[in-house]
Image 1: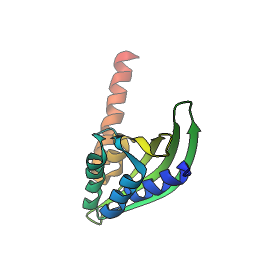
Image 2: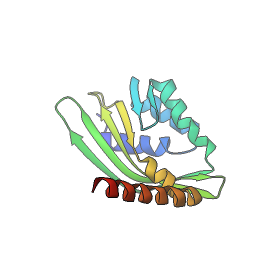
Image 3: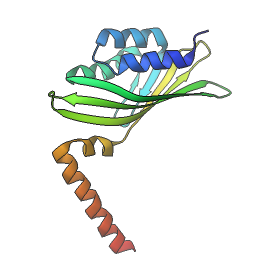
Length: 152
């Protein structure tokens, strides 16, 4: 039986790259044919749809992964591996978008991924873009003050 922590870490590393061959191989080697992928923006089912979601990473000029922490959880009906990481996407070789991501991999009895969920925040994305972040954070603070005055 395969070590699910190793499978999850290897899969995570391949998916968060710009190499579509590594992405495809990781999905086809480690996911069940009817696996599901979900994040705050998309939902995909099956190898082809999941591959298409990660293929979008080829449009970034760079991707790096740091601060990786991995946890294994065993439940009665399935095993789960959680990976916390800081993934930085680079646009146009200038704009860096650091994103804190928690990836949850659920495994079946044959150590294949049946469900992969990425949890991340739109706030992290918007705050990470220099000019947009400045306006976004100012708006959030202003809205917080308005709600506090009305409700408090």
